[in-house]
Length: 153
Image (cartoon, rainbow, N blue to C red):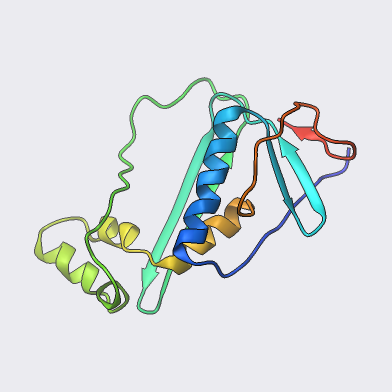
């Protein structure tokens, strides 16, 4: 079987990126997921245990968050991890100017956590683009997918 692929990239408002990620979350909770863009679509059927990988970077003028979900035959979910995602309490130009790093250093916190949470709408849009989920994506009602779409697990 040949590889089916959908790529999506767009500049979105933070609210649009959030809505896209929420649509992906709703679809994942319900089972098979249909993702379509530019006349192409792929239906995927995630397993119960997923691999999750984050890559976050920040420098003045640009923040980036990459999110990757994978599934294969994992023995089980990891019991513990140290990933924390929470609001940073920093808004606007302070994050862009790198003040998030200075505030975190002064407070004795790990500056990397401040960077991860201080991403801007560009980081949200990058996450949505990397997730390849267009806004409004809904879960596939049937496991086999529509004609011409393969379910990949």
